[in-house]
Image 1 (tube, rainbow, N blue to C red):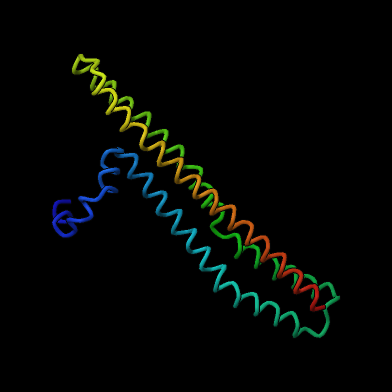
Image 2 (spheres, rainbow, N blue to C red):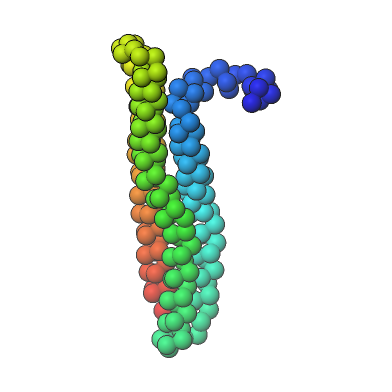
Length: 180
């Protein structure tokens, strides 16, 4: 860790680093969960913005190239395309939802472990110094605040992704239906 501190001195003297150090070990776990969650959210945004358009164009072109659209086989192929699109559109959304719901739980875990640490320090020192207790409680509540903020931002992003994915799936279905 010291070699990293010497390589990036500005990072280790930043307010973010101070916040993470005051929040305790659980805050680092929360940061890892938030990082993975936002990595998946960004991947979904990029997929919905760019990659999905190519797949959708291929499905529509393949459907329009068919000579007949009313047979059982044609309808099964159309349903297969819609199911494949739905799977591609909703990929990782359940994992994002789980990670978002994990954020407040990790925050509460940080608060509980922080409070246990405060009470342990108070019992070892035999003191009920309000300053010691206030700083410990402050340290214990930081993970809860961070978990709630992360969950709110993640819930908003998840709900928008679900809405866009649903809208794109309906739009594809309408395009395939109008191409009949």
